[in-house]
Image (cartoon, rainbow, N blue to C red; front, top):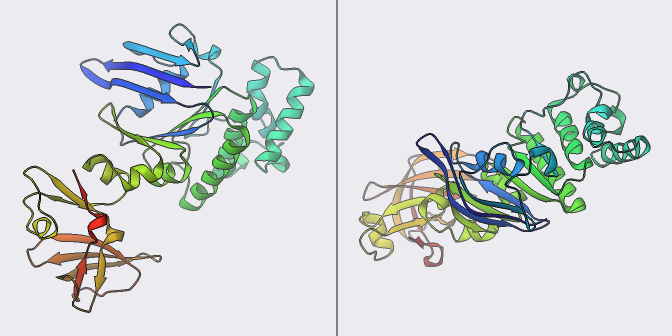
Length: 326
């Protein structure tokens, strides 16, 4: 199911939260809408679900306009951040709920629910209530409830934000596996860049009601279109055109901005490159994060595999191929 948005505008009072958005989500893709709180991404998700309507513009599922189609007729399913499970129903009954509402025959309900619970490895919990489950288990049940109705469009509203880091990693893998198995067109809203990079077929980075850039995770990470995207989709050293250190790296025109990622800063003790002092050194397990103070007093973030203690005099450089200019 293709989704197409044409010139969508949404206002709340004097504030424009969605500003002339044009977007096509391809059939079968897992599209991630990434942006900070208040950028309009959840409003866009709610429009697809039919919970709110654009002030202008058109929304299509396939070739059908959704202008007058109520939420219960849109063949969508949503996975919420707070699970939204019925506490008085068992796991089996929660997953079966949407099928019962759609008046699916009882035998078919049993078959599809058992199949869904098997997919998410929750079959042995089917008689338990949500309060007897962990957060990760509850989110698995919420996923099964959404997938089991076989919607045309699946909507994810920051579903992993309430889970701890290990559970988030597990659930990302689960969502990716289920999406690959079903091929349901999906829109996933998040502010977490790692979720976007690890899950998405494509990403739309959103800011102040506008989609700043569309592309694959690799395209957006390696070729961000502006400093906002560069900083939001990963960490970035940003230097204005008049920065003394930027001038040493590259000749810039007025109002140009230079950027480079911490992992592309090469640090050594051998005298190769620019002199700096380590003013902060943070051990993060897989890497060491350094804040380097240059001779001109600017601070540069670098990630290294080697440990450098605070106060150490080092040298560093950035390959020309890793410099970005906007």
